Image (cartoon, rainbow, N blue to C red; front, side, top):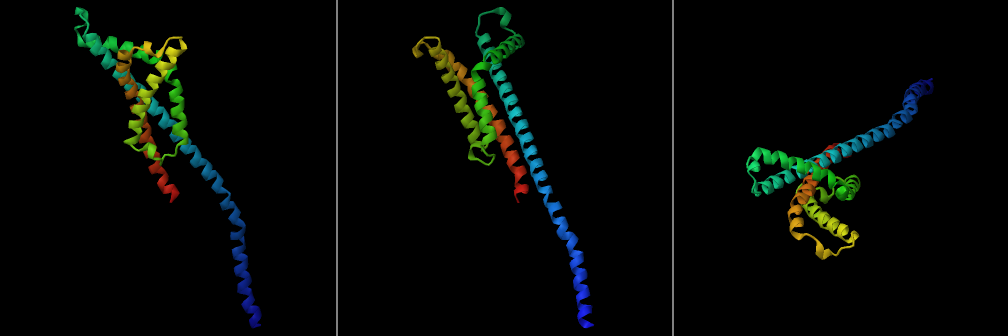
Length: 201
């Protein structure tokens, strides 16, 4: 009798714990969907980050070209251009045209930036707020001179025929473009890295 009384609670405990064992796979099946959601959120954040970086970079390029154009128009001996507001309007229009015309030249570098943004981890030292803009400035200047040399050689002319004075002036907006894009990208990467800290813990 005592053995029977002892076995009954044991059997009841086993029966109560059996449904929990059967439910374990159900809770485990939720993990893939959670991981898929996290990956989708990460991809969405990357798309927003790279888009905002490009918009900020192009806006900075347009502003720098407008400033340089306004200064250049002010040096012209023309009474109609003595008005600062008129010079800014004309320079901003020319800057917009230059941004559109120059698109085929910096498009390959933008694609290279896409690859770097999506494949370099957000915790990499390249995305540091100080290192990334400096690298962007250097890449922007390098891209300008590289494109100029490639275009000159493709037309059959020698590198010595490059307009060095014009390239020196154009180096400023090229550096602004690269620095602004990388600064915005670094800020986005830092924000994504901070968001991923609680998930890793």
